Length: 161
Image 1 (cartoon, rainbow, N blue to C red):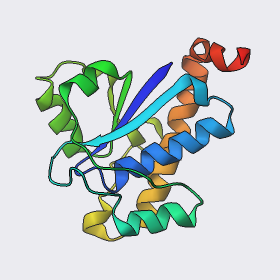
Image 2 (image 1 turned 30 degrees about the horizontal axis):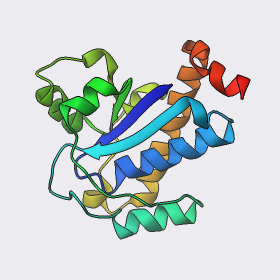
Image 3 (image 1 turned 45 degrees about the vertical axis):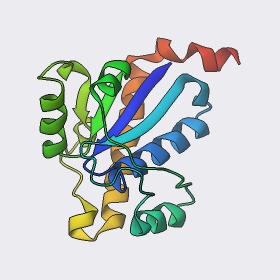
Image 4 (image 1 turned 60 degrees about the vertical axis):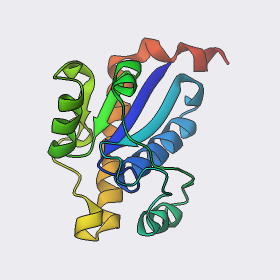
């Protein structure tokens, strides 16, 4: 099983969108049994809150579920996940600080898998939830292609069931 956790600042916009988008992609490929996909925030500022309403609207517009409660990332989350996918450079710095620089080999900016590596701009600040959704979708697509190409042996369970 491949465990993936998406990380942003508050866990109410970008990281839940990443979680829902990748879950849908792996379901469509018949790989849901081979993945554990979650999300968290580097801050506790939104802990316990639902997905931010404009992010809900973006998810709904694309036919994706949006049930989620924000929580803060822990070092245990980093240890127990295969891939930590952060949305921007600030999130990357915060995760590396949380882990005292350990586990860097499994911490990636989501859009580092795309042909145009970049941060996913925070729609809380920009107000542009559609661009964030599209950037996250692109990042998830390229990340999944990377896994299917480089880690194909990890998906045998789905082929047997």
